[in-house]
Length: 108
Image (tube, rainbow, N blue to C red):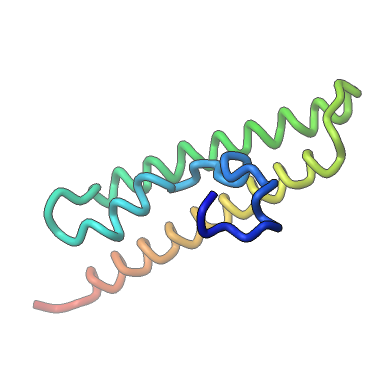
């Protein structure tokens, strides 16, 4: 791959990208005003991806406990990804609720 250091050439880029907010978040932040993804669509995508990561983590832990060939580090990484995705979704929700409450407190 051009522009990639020799150290990184052995790492699969596909394995690093879960797709968490890859399309909706980038489209919403780069599009500006015209043709952008609505905020509700970004939130819906975030919830779906968070749910998928949680299911993947649950399957990995179950596979680890059943002895079906899942490595400990894979289960831990999947659990951390699910935890971080949940924390991100929670913080976005908190910011949205705070912004809504601030707008409702304004007097016109």
